[in-house]
Image 1 (cartoon, rainbow, N blue to C red):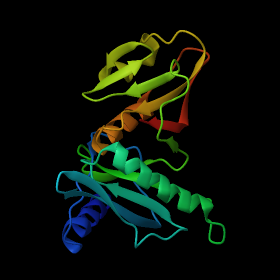
Image 2: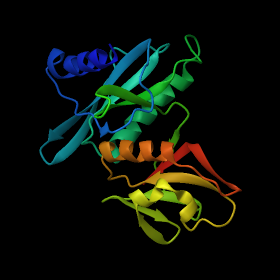
Image 3: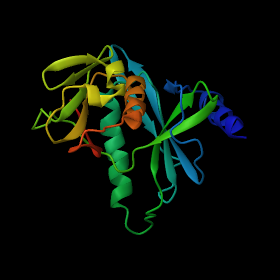
Length: 211
């Protein structure tokens, strides 16, 4: 039934509306089931030499869980401002506010063969460079990550304990604005798997910088 739901949702996007959203892919599911939901789509558009992000939220109900189905080809510099507008709308709602209604990004789990979701309700985005850089991990293009002044492969992040973060600090993540949304979701899933054993080092999952 879970797999069927994923097929139906994608079928509605590609056939029912005569439009395509190419979802990001991963090999694991963070969240498998979401009920009482409203789908929101952000389409990949091209106008001449310009790439555009087109939002369709006509089916969104403020009291439900929002599922953002975002084309993986779109760059973060176009996606995140639209996500911020949607978040703000929901956060500012007073009359019909539902504290239990969350926001999720959707993606395809290629191993489990199901539609999967990653929550981002509590994430506050900033489209600017962080003020303090030495406690930030910055995801760059081409599978690279910058920590302090050192560059690593994204695969080396599987165990932060082996990296050179020696002093107590709060780790906040930032992302290259030219990363594709597909790459961003891969990075988000990797962050969910991170384990830190060093005392005095913790991850802030509620703040992200895109620049």
